[in-house]
Image 1 (cartoon, rainbow, N blue to C red):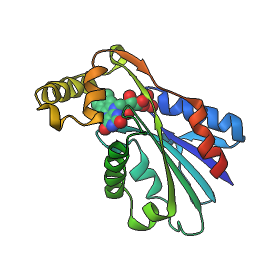
Image 2 (image 1 turned 90 degrees about the vertical axis):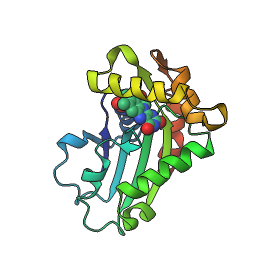
Image 3 (image 1 turned 90 degrees about the horizontal axis):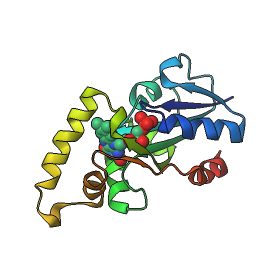
Image 4 (image 1 turned 180 degrees about the vertical axis):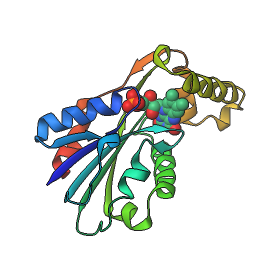
Length: 174
Ligand SMILES: Cc1cc2nc3c(=O)[nH]c(=O)nc-3n(C[C@H](O)[C@H](O)[C@H](O)COP(=O)(O)O)c2cc1C
């Protein structure tokens, strides 16, 4: 039995998960609706990044009791460009803190690019992004990583980097 689980606040990760479900014919659920994860032998988790955390992933995957005999695939969805190795290293380091060592080592991890529409952000997220932006623009040029530069460039805008072609790497693995 296979399942695709998504953690999405504004729909980008959900859209990737829905497209993957359409292509593979696998059952799909929001992390909020997952109760028994243990009876699936393939678990695909697609979650959006919020301040380095993958939405819903930690508490959902912690419900897996034996991960060695399962196929676990995790895809993050964020604004930062996954083609940049520094971005990927940052995401992976943060994921190590959210998953058990066993789970992290057993999972196949992918990174997809999402988007953002500032006009849709809730108050908390708008405030967080405003504070991050203020801090970022004040940084000396050499301290601005690709991730920070992308955040500055897209501030207060609507950008969409969703690319369903990038799901091919996941379908091959599934
Ligand atoms: C408050 C906030 C924090 C974010 N933190 C990150 C981050 O750490 N890394 C990243 O790549 N993108 C970050 N993003 C961008 C989101 O991951 C991106 O908009 C994603 O597509 C949202 O997915 P969703 O539409 O499924 O909720 C952040 C966005 C907001 C609003």
